Length: 134
Image (cartoon, rainbow, N blue to C red):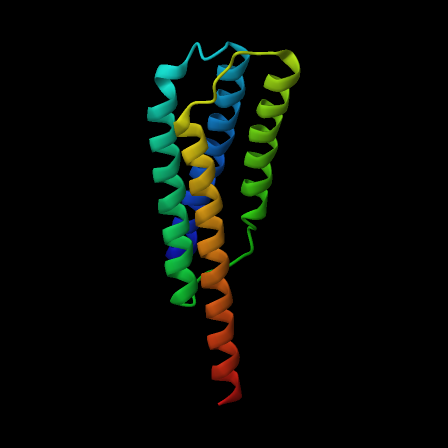
């Protein structure tokens, strides 16, 4: 049960920082990069927290203590909407906003982490099917 609590804690922390970081990205866009000096620290903090959560979740999955289903598609969707929205808004508003590279790197990290966890989940399920056949 303590593993579930740890995962639940990291999920809550990750959800909190996801919302905070995405709102920050939108505010930074709306203020034409006024807070650009905070993008790097926010990105590093966010990716660190996300990695801890995913690491905990995958460790629990492979030790068969993972409980619950919290799809990463939600993170990918939220990030995609924000990034796409900023790109479209910049184009139509004629904004000279330049998206910081740390934001693009964070988006790529979210996509990469999602892809890796999907592959890990698939391998885990395949191993489970093999065990059941034996």
